[in-house]
Length: 279
Image 1: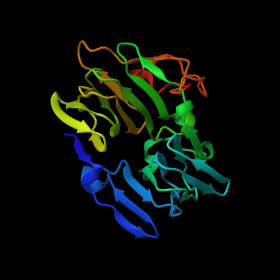
Image 2: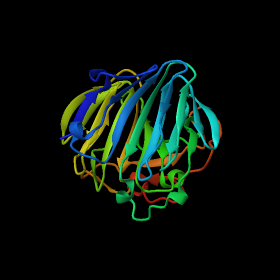
Image 3: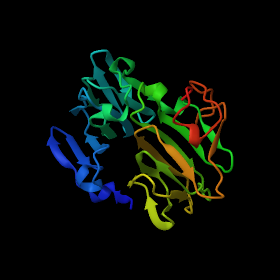
Image 4: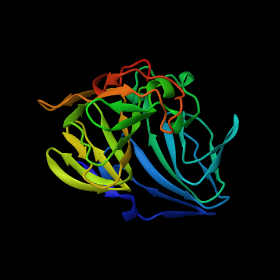
């Protein structure tokens, strides 16, 4: 069965000097060591070490506020529009420019999930996700923006995206084989079905799903539902329930702001999303 919890139920640990962190997904909570996630809060001017171990892969979302990311390559300002891919062995410092909240995920012992693991193919990526291509669902009004893909990361350790559900939209019932995955609800509320059992979910919830569990979302709320979701490993099979529409995603030729996207992604089904060379 899935593990569902809200980040507000977990207390921050005060690390001092304006830095707090709370563990979200950990082994004690989900009984799996595939991935760990954390929520970080840095007061204005506070600093945090986000360095990555040599056998790990890490990524970061800026949930609110802004900060500087510093590495040996220089520094860059990041805001709520940015997704960071932090490759193995990278020395990273993050300095808050105002109160900033960051979501971080890390896959420990990452080479176990990719037999072609090669650190030379991986580099720091500061991706402005608002400039990434938006894909529309062929059967409803859902939208998808890819965040973590083999093309962007240089590895099949993990794959992830942001999904947007307008009110009234619903996905097809399905399950995955060969990966565990999780969602973090950023906005809205909805009903989440696992093995046909409904769960009410809302902003701040983390949902951890094991392989072979049938699941889907129904946005029966009054506002758009948005969440980020990640799969570990990033190579798996998606199986739809009998009679369900296979999720097919078509390019819009636009980013979420209505401008030209930073790159092109062709139309595809979710069944082939993990094997596409243009992702």
